[in-house]
Amino acid sequence: MTSPPPRSSPGAASAHALAPTPAGLACAAAGLVIDPLRPVARALVTHGHSDHARPGHGAVMATAETLAIMEARLGPNFAGSTQVAAYGEPVRIGEATVTFLPAGHVLGSAQILIEAAGRRYVVSGDYKRQTDPTCLPFEPIPCDVFVTEATFGLPVFRHPEAAAEVGRLLRSVALFPDRTHLVGAYALGKAQRLIAELRRAGYERPIYLHGALVAICALYEEAGVSLGPLVPVGAKREPLAGEIVIAPPSALGDLWSRRFADPVTAFASGWMRVRAHARQRGVELPLVVSDHADWEDLCTTIVETAAAEVWVTHGEEDALVHWCGTRGIAAKPLRLVGYGDEGEAEPPPAGPGAASAEAATDGGVDGSPEAGAAS
Image 1 (cartoon, rainbow, N blue to C red):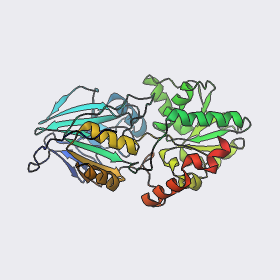
Image 2 (tube, one colour):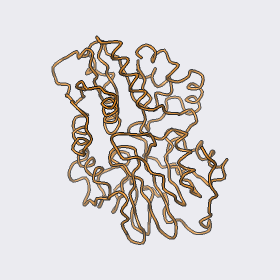
Image 3 (cartoon, rainbow, N blue to C red):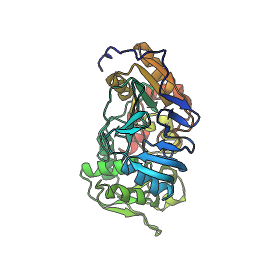
Image 4 (cartoon, helix red, strand yellow):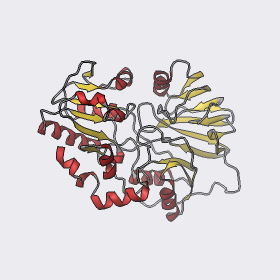
């Protein structure tokens, strides 16, 4: 990673056009709130996960894909009105100009550039820098203030390439042809990415789906993301020996999972870097696949934006703020409560310090006996 370029001062004495409020990050000059935590008159939504896309707003502006996801998950009356935001097309709202740009997180995800009062603010939402065949790649945007998440904002979190983790899954399938491989993956984004990576690796057999994944997979395919042959797991008790079944993480340990042939339980999540998470969930094959930026990508992105200020919305805020300080970048945690309720943004079970220590001493996934048993 290169050293940060010189940063210009936007004038510390002047007020910001974007500010945290109880409803979320608000731009008064445009009368809007980004990813509101409560119903507001005008909402700009970065992506379709439920901790960012809530119902009940007067008007919602988002990409066409995010609006379709919101309708599928929240119903047709999730907002009073909707407005499609096309990637890269500036729109004037009040005294601000708003532009949506790809975030690389899930289908339709966007960063939001706000230009107001002589400053450029980028609200990244959730994002990642790894290649994902199911959505457009993240684009670093030069700005004065960069608003970032920090879900995996600790140096211990270094995500391997998803293709390598999918390779471990396929080797396990070949090694245990009499066992079902039951893979936990979050319903929006992770499941579809995992399927697409399996197809890219040459896996052509049908992939079996828990019922909770069927509608979102269909939505992805309608948006042009090819997922190959998918078969819903029916009510009939089928053992599906030698097959791959993808289900929400909550289904891994319930009665539904007992129908399968001596299942190898896998879980695709960035938290699988920490051995305690795999052990706590009873995961035999942890797969470190994340839709969030890891530590290196968080730091690289901050450098590439050349932002004079960094605001951290949620996650491991303090570590990232400290890192910014060591490089002369003004940074502060926003401590916005309400984000991180879906997907990977769940808290570690033993706190960040324990997560760091355990992964460092156990070698994370690569050094775990659970991984070796099925890979």
